[in-house]
Image: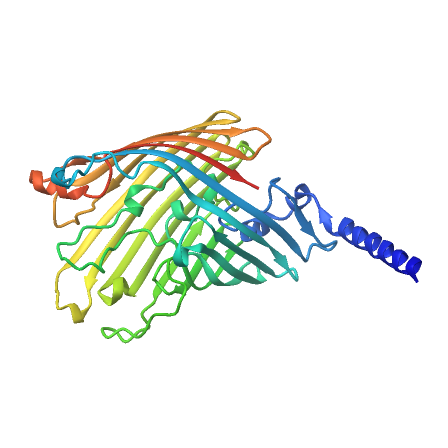
Length: 419
């Protein structure tokens, strides 16, 4: 009996090893998928069709499983101007500086039944609802008709849609992340132009290897909220959701959502895009927000060029009894170049009409970056500097108020690792 048990254990071990050997493939084999497949398998953190880590795949390619992790650690120095600081309370010009870990992501992504893409990941460095960074499934009736449900990126702005680990700068443009200024003391109303991650459903596809579209509905509450909290609008009697869409033209085939990758130094891709969204009863039912944007991006050998312009209109809901409306705009242009297969330099110029078009004055924010990709390690080191300038304001008070909460000088070092 004892020998029979040993024999059974040995046979089970051999069969398991054989099964594993039949299902494991190298990522180079996965990279042979079509461009449209790679586009749809992109999980927004790292691309699945690369040589990081390992990927398991069935013999017929219908099932793919890729675990991954992504870590980002930063050392920042941020200097704030004197306006807004009360020396009586010992408030310092240098604040929000030191070490930080914005991302510690663990997840898995892949394909099932040859028709479903999936991705689930958590950000252990976040808190609250942001811990669940993404969780979605994507069903492909065809490459031209796909359905995605879950928590994922809303279709607005190239900067947010770029793969997280492959951005030119270690921080997003300030015009997308800084909150707009409203002349009302409503704590719940802090609109920003960027939309980021949210819970929802979308229809999307890629037609004739040139035309892309994304249309869908989201909660409009952002990534920090994973619950169903919305109702019907009192103003227009529509569900209080985010209605969004994006159209792209990619004349040279699907463009990788990257702003620089040392493995892609011989690409020739281009993207034009327009997008718009309407957040019905946004900001705790206080405002209705409309956004629109235009984007352009290009990869040409060692060059990357990107530019965007976006607009936001804010109108208060009837219950607020405020008739005023406000308009904001922003945009940026950036360029990156690999001076060496492992060294990339970048420049960015960012503009933001933070106080609205009814007041004069804008923020102008030049920035520079240097990225080093450590060979054969998947480690990326980045250094960036950004300056916040102000111009065109009518009064010194307007000038001082426009950059409240935004540091004048930012110097940052970043180390990221992806597996």
